[in-house]
Image 1 (cartoon, rainbow, N blue to C red):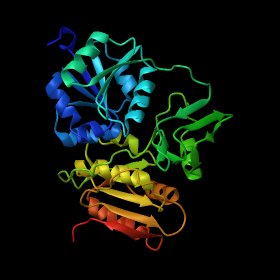
Image 2: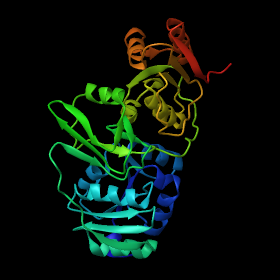
Image 3: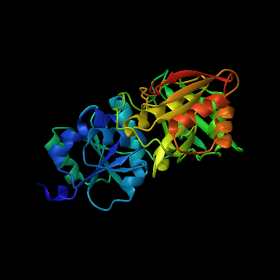
Length: 344
């Protein structure tokens, strides 16, 4: 083996590289010392794959920036162009990046990356080797989200803020707010949710477009029926941080949040109680663990009823089914059940 590859760390971004079998194939070809997983849905896909990997909640640039030895990023973009754009974005935050783009079998050697290592990876994989330079010029207070497909959802920090109308969405921030410059049909409630958490720094915010995962989740063993009830309010990407200890269920607030939580928790075997109001953006293949219930508010917003439940109900349950039944009784006449996976 090429000496520079002996200690290779492979950083995998996104679930598609696992779901399409890329990671398994590259494992066999490159024999990396370690596989690190960057991102939330990638972690779900990694766990379902059964491949040995260390999962993180950090973005790829943070994971790669903390490494000192030979490393590469593995990605499968929804299109080759979006994959290249993502690689350029990550490379712009690093001194150099070797980017293995599986959507079109390309190894990008960005900026000052190790050319010898990039060539060795290209040779072993049979991928084309491309030298590329990232663009590091950014306008203060302006963020471009490139590689969008018109009609797909656009996210900032895990919250859907609208639908793309062009390949590039341009956002700007000033005087404590964010507005659309071009390329987006905005979702006002999404911007409201985003700003409720505080004005994000557009230069460092996590921005993406399109579905967060195309594949349906795999089922898992049922979690304990007693323990903590975790509350996730319109921030499904934070779920893994909360799933430590004895968790028997998740109260998820918001349509997209419920979809994401249901998908992640399906493999973990953790049921959810989802509160929605019918404005889902179809960002992920649905899936729910046994014992899950989803209710739609009859009038008003999911935010209000979800927070009311979180404030009024104990978040320590001796029995998940009893907790759900008592919550439904408290909401009688105000919600309707749209999914019920409790055992008869």
